[in-house]
Image 1 (cartoon, each protein chain N blue to C red):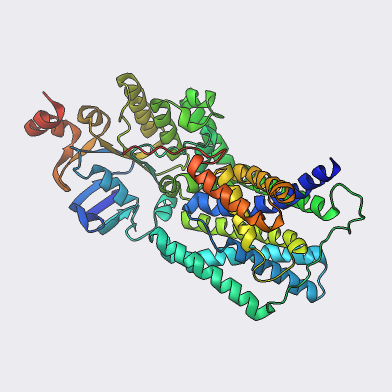
Image 2 (tube, helix red, strand yellow):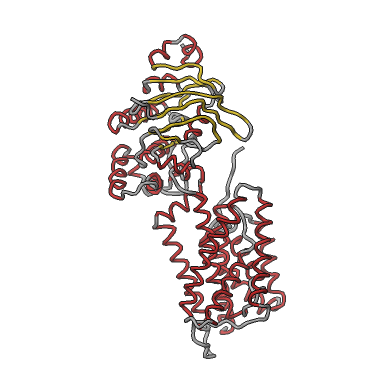
Length: 237
Length: 288
């Protein structure tokens, strides 16, 4: 089966500074793949490259169609939802307005309304706060909102940039449980960027390790978890 | 006492004009953080279009609506054609483009319609003398309020309005939900030009129509926007009414009509030194 996402020789640039140096990876439909690595390894840049929010070279094929050179808005319309680093909350707008914006690229009104109800079922706390300004939510609630906003697009692929960042362990566990649930029930494929390697390897079936803009290691999560170097550098045991 | 009330009402009427010019400035400032110096000249040019339509025998409200529509399209076109290429350019580049637009519209109006001062009709009945507020003043306040309500409803209740607010607030994130941010800026320009056109048509019966008609009014509009907080549409409106009343009262009782315009300048300088965020603006704190 052809992979949902196929990346070949991807390079990315901020101005004249190169951040990715020809990385290759792929993601199977319905799977969860993790991108691991230290700070500055190029994890966030990889996601931004997929959304075409940075200048790139190389090929990216999503569902068989080339993405490179398209506008970010058009990539989104192809079904790629991006939960950016920092969560990208529209802080001055209400929770409900944030969710409505998530479905902006969709045209089916009825489906959108039904999906909003499903988000509220999944995250009852968002329902309680639906009329509240999104900026007043706690960090965990904002992360739930960011994930829900992305899911409102009804995406084929969800790009997640450090969903655990700055959150208490209990909240992180809750969010990761729900991510697994969404993947199993709705069949949404996910590309997960995480600093917390142990957590990411538990959720993901496949992982790539990035080091200074290059893929250093790749394989099924169990194999990566057993790797001596990874264990020492990223898992800490 | 009656004279005082009359002055206040007259102030509210001109305040409505300043409010809408201020609102037009805020519409563009919110999403781009630029002050469009050509806003006044664009409004003046729109008013000339209305004048030309009236000369051609159009009924007033027909000409009014057509002018608003043409101005909207014109504002959108200006953003798409002239400003889009400099979207990411430094502020100074944009300022120069604005000044260029100002000069172009001013000379274009003089060239096409010449510089003689022209009367512009009011759609409201003539004043019958012993009223506290003239029908035109009352009418233009009403028109401005209608504009406000329509704008509020558009931004608050439509999905395009929501997208515009989202794009102004967080363009990066807006792109990630599929909003075409650059078109939202164009839409902002269109709306702002349309609001300016209404202001121009409402003020022209009072100040008469000529290419330099909006010079002073833009200054008041700017003072209104600053007073209310340059990033807050409702602040700009309230600021406009305050500036209008203040200008009229000071002009009538304190400094005389010749020095009226300096009220706006003094106000601008005072606000910028004492309370740069205005009455209702929010303080933006950036962590570095």
